[in-house]
Image (cartoon, rainbow, N blue to C red; front, side, top):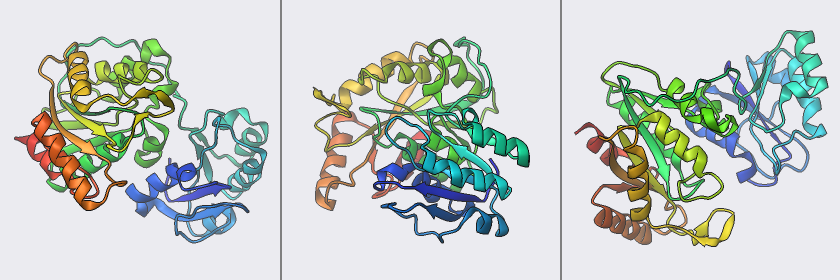
Length: 331
């Protein structure tokens, strides 16, 4: 996808509904030119409000739909602004379950104006099955005690810290928001199950001995809804290093109120066991925690307890930074 972006917030009900736009703004602010909101929108990125025509005149290249809704569909109220964007000379990108290319008005407008439609959630190529063969280069994978507990944020923070030290590292996106941030990747939850590990191998190919692929994790081995995607990522990435992500205030798995959250120790044991099937030398280098719902004292206590019980550094990418994890990774 070409930058700069006009971030479309639609009629987002709250900040969480626009998490894709916010993720792109946090990690790639230099690519974000402005925002477009519809009446009733309840969030903002703090960027200038622009129409597609105004954004195009200022150099925008892509109209990025950075808002999601239940069901992942594109409502009619989003189609008209997208058609305007295409007519103004912008490409359109979205990470919804509904494909942009399946909406007749958008397909016709893209063809008429010679613009591109990016359905970032849907792979644009086929993948082979995974082979599990050892390949050169190094790989780090973020994993979790649950879904939506900071794996993408941690991966991006690790990449930034490594690049800041002059290390050869690249963030590999495996979800729609990550792809919007990176500009490419594979949304593995839209890959047929047999090919998830193969898609991950394709995403993290042979590389130089000093090169690190920092792979965005998905789901959790302990989450009944998403464990299959997690396992495919683990086997395909053949990680040399793992980081366990955790949100300490949760009482149950996300979306499953009758299923208690597993312990960090149990997740480490199970994840290492799964990862050793394709890389016997894998190691857990640290814990990354989202302590945003805790005050400073409680956060420090949670991090200290996690480090003590696991024997590896525990950080919050926002409160403490991830330097201790990179120190351990490069030791």
